[in-house]
Image (cartoon, rainbow over all chains, first blue to last red; front, side):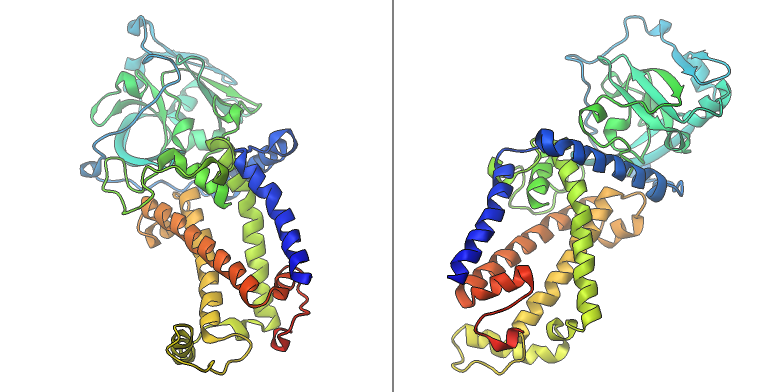
Amino acid sequence: MTDRRSFLKLAAAAGPASLAAACGWDGGNALRPSLLTISRFNDWVGERVLSASGRLAPTYDPAERTPRLPSYFISRATPVLQDPAAWRLRVNGLVRAPLALTLGDLAAMPRVSYTVKHHCVEGWTAIASWHGVPVSAVAERCGLLPTARYVRFDSFDSGYFNGWDLASAMHPQTILAYGLNDNPLAAAHGAPLRVYSPLKLGYKLTKYVVSLTFMDTRPGGYWEDQGYPWFAGL
Amino acid sequence: MVASGLQIYRAYARFGERGGPFFPNPFQDQQFPAWSRLGGWLAGALNWHFALMWPLGAIGLLYVSYLVGSGEWRALLFRPRDVAGALAMGRYYLRLRKDHPPQGKHNPLQKFAYSSIVIVGILAVLTGIAIYKPVQFPWLVALFGGFQAARFWHFWTVWIFVAFTATHVLLVFVVDPASLRAMITGWYRGRFPSHD
């Protein structure tokens, strides 16, 4: 009898677990909030413990570039500017001097160029070269107020945006990229300007950027608000 | 952990940089059936995976510290001197030998299984850390042969784990059902006195 009873106990335990799996369950109203709370804890571990050293991501030789770099956007068609000459990068929020920078202004600022590995949350990776200006150089130019703790990057891609912690944004490898593989950034990859960092998953790297807003409250993000990890640091 | 992993696998069902080459993988571009996946979509699966990693790691640590602290590891650790006994056991299971070789609490093949599953568990965690934070743990990524290789090994440790668990529980029903309770509660009241 013992074995039958213990088998039934096992079955009782396995039942709900397999049922949960069968439903493609994301936790439902009961567990999903707890999972998101743990995700916020993981953000804290990533931000405050694992990435605290400010370690640099490895760089590669341009010869190691992956033949194809996938890209995506939220809009139905590739987002393009109606009037590229009128485009400005707006820098505002908790700053002494709000800015409106042209591509020429950005090109005249300190240039960072590196060949790094891109990690998508889906699991694929690809090596490419990126050229741009460090976010920290822009922050220096606008005179960041000491109350700024986060930055929000907004785009003209159907409201896509991302919120970053300030330390990640000020990392020397976090740039506003205007070039990819020795060419100007193509429309498919976020022209005229996109965020790039080899220390974040791809969905944190806002394309089609129109503004930077320095803030003291944590901005969410397009995917982050739907449940994807917020910190997403590698 | 396994079910959410299968949901995550669905997002990029191959191992290798974009454009290849890809690691040999019978499941390349395959999807696992809905009943085997947990999370509903990639974000849901990631949140399950990154929540369950904490209890997995904690229980693994607790298990290994108990083995070390209690001295029970002596009965489980496969040592070089167990090789001959393992071969004898293998011949017995393959019916090439009639009598059951003498053994202590566990026979050498059991020791091999219980020792290697600890290593597989450690590899599962380390490959997981390598692909979770590859920039912060470059030495781990290098140890496993790169990011995509670490993903590959992370995936395969799962199948070893699943095979081990299935065999383990199957043998319990075949050999000594009473030990199932012992596995869950820690108390054994079956017919093999050596299991105390």
